[in-house]
Length: 556
Image 1 (tube, rainbow, N blue to C red):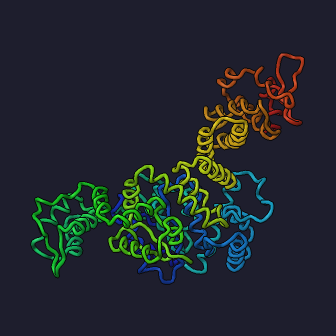
Image 2 (image 1 turned 30 degrees about the vertical axis):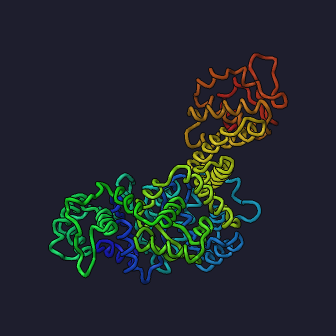
Image 3 (image 1 turned 90 degrees about the horizontal axis):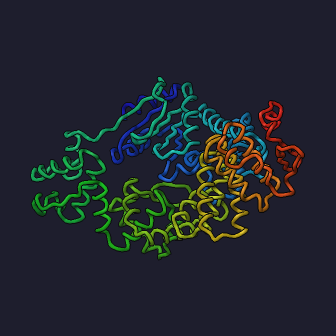
């Protein structure tokens, strides 16, 4: 806390600081920042963003969370209202930032009419989008110091990582305190910065662990042996210690009657050896209705608004509130402040994980589908905000058509945002789902559309001559022989050209130059010479000329 306070004072004085808390699960990363924010946020604008376990497949997930908070965009706001909020905030902040609007509109999915950036190079668009967000935060810090918190970076997506790297490079002379936390498996390149501080949160030492247990259990001398056993089993992990005490209270091994005391000998206590085992035991002891609710919430996600809970689990308000209160009393979930709607969150990611794993597979599938349908109904006017969630839930249900629809939409949106790695994952998942549908002409045409979209993405992410790119080009060639638009045939031609030119000799041997001419009659012509000419619209290339500089320049 003291190290973070020192960093905050430097940041407030215009010497921006970055503080990182690194620790294993349950050691207190989130709690540290929660306590710091609660005691030190006066005079600061606080912006928070969270990563989630499936967030690596969701481009800009935490960045969008941060932007929604900054522009005060509510879930129920339609596109017009969102544009008004963004416009109003930018004009008030600084008219010189007007040029950031197209990039923000594109990222937030609120473009009106034709997208003015649709023809811009993807990498340029991505760079300028990240720069636009950075410029807004830096300009805001001139008005008031900013406390920007990014949690759980071990689940961060590539685009958010790129933004964090850019922001970290830019805060040295700004009134910005950037707080991040992560587990040890996460890696970064910030250590060399003079304004970077890393806090390693280790499990509690013996004295601190005893102090914590005294706060939980009191100072009854008869509990000293129990405290020793708990510290030994939990190895000083605060969350594990807290849950161990709670499970002993739940099962009646500990009782509070003015003074906390044991009701049975220590030798008869059965304390699970892992925090997951402790949590599973606590969940099993819940009343059945409360357990069902907790399991349903774990399928929804780490955080959940009350409106979504009601849509997924239709119960009388009185009954639902009773069960939520029971889960809060057991410290499984907490209520947290939110704009416009009451929200709840799991006390810890491990609580959600253990609860989720306790749900039988068939019921889990049904819950994922029910949650997907509830999100569609609740957020029909802002469905673009929830494509990744819908893809996540329907992909884990038995509803293949819905899963395919949202994976494809999520992939195309990621491509529109120039988030190529995320587009590749979503489009690949969509193709795998499509292959589970019965064979038909319609399926082939849909696959052709997906493959021709995936091809250029693979060229960027994997390389022109990568095996994955080759496979897509060959598959598109198979599909285009039965039809396809001029644009799709051109995509094929681009892929084959690039793959062969960069040096994929395996492709040349695989298809042979003669087969390159075996496109539909409408899209091929043959010269009298032995070499083939591929024609798509007005574009014509002879394999023999592919290594000539002028042809390469035209192709580029």
